[in-house]
Length: 261
Ligand code: F6R
Image (cartoon, rainbow, N blue to C red; front, side):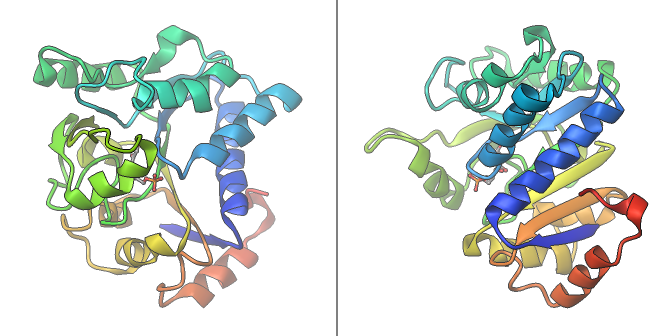
């Protein structure tokens, strides 16, 4: 696990965007795993700028989103379909047929989850998975106690996560408790993961993910077992990391070919 500590959320997002762009340039038919939520918004707008200004080409890219709310139609303003369309897909040139997001209205949820897994497999697996981090240590919507080998399935959100998500919904609107999410096992199979987090609200989860024991109570901690994971955090969310100085030293002393910027 490589831990990179940047000064601000803007720097975190720009570095994440550069890593995604590098992946797409190196392998134009990359399969990207994508996250929603507040954290990656600036990364998506950065990638949209690269598409517009530097002609970063997504025409051969395939995407799989991590999750979707059960019961929300794709055109619902708070669905993750809508989020992705607004924040990213409408600004770049990924062909519609290459975009995959779990179906929140699926009649047979277990069958649609199996199909989602099969589609990832048929696409050759995920090359680069972008992840955010829940304050309770979740990745995707794999809440604490999720099996570390779990696959795409329905999950029930904790009250902590429902409360955190409430900020995206209108006052009085019901926040869904049920989601379809890629499993921890699905995420672990990605060839590379980049996890981004910022703000002091994430400090506890970041420390438990990076330096705590590997446990289903902090699903993100399983990334310690992943051979190619980059954690990009800001100073505020890194403040509980015991080995902060070491991570800075490693990053500042990389040899030229290891650098992302
Ligand atoms: C959403 C997802 C979640 C979020 C996490 C953090 O697709 O996978 O794990 O990344 O809940 O959400 P924000 O970024 O809103 O703090």
